[in-house]
Length: 402
Image (cartoon, rainbow, N blue to C red; front, top):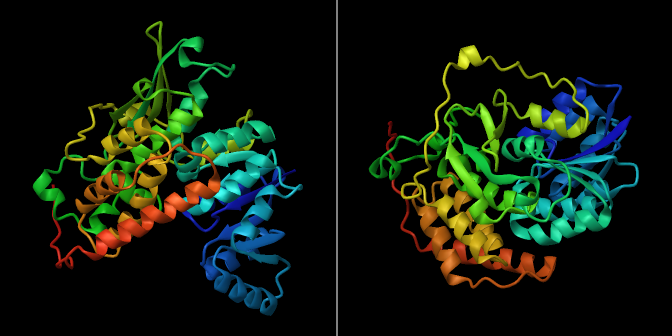
């Protein structure tokens, strides 16, 4: 029996992880579940999966959960805050940690799991975007096993050579090719993008995801963050990473080799496939995902990303090239901008404009510590909040269509 801590259990990835675990009751047990503030969802999960610990990031939510747990006579210990998250991520009885907390909040518990030598199923982009070198060093020093769960990086991991290397060319790799669906606005003109509403942006054509990552997918920032992740996961230089728009989301990513071969991982767009791969690695288990029918798909299309209409991808490459704290600045600014867009405080096209301002206003510096990164994160958030406060109120917008 392998015991799993799920960081972010009430989110989309957390729920899908629990679904895969439910299909293999004799193989996996739930050690701990964590959420931000959704007490009702956490109570349902506690009753169904009977974890030893439940952690709420929000202290007030933890107090409420304790009262509800006691009233319903549930046998679980409730913890709170970052200390609670790090405790269940590094607990000696935990075998695997699904790191699926969205945003910078997932950094410290993921680091704790790495230092404790856990098998880490990494679905939190910000851990590598903010603190790539520090996190990879922690994985190495703690002798942890790092398994990427993002469908793109999981695909690359599956078709990459497993031996150690200093440069991709050492194992015959020419280039890593990240595929992108293009999001819901792939065919939109610049004029149409000006009137995009949160409701439209939340309608992804292929994937079922949380609100923040769905908006990121529509702006191509999600792909930009994945470029930075790929740099750290696979020791790839920026020029060794290519992004290709693939609307069907069937090929999840590819690896190009020097002999002319391209190896790809294909499958239906369902996150339970990489989750099952990560849980059972190096074995394979059923995931509940319907097998892919190439005859039903019929055709696969590819095109270059348009970084003029969708400049967030370019900004991510710029931040990666700048190095140091630049990716952390970009990530923090993006989190604030996306939240403001979802709250109708800014327009859709304000997102990339604000990110570029943040990168211009805050100078990047070499990364020295987690404390420094958290300070930079706070600085970028404060700047974005100030910039957003100076933007005139957003008028009621009409829906647009392609």
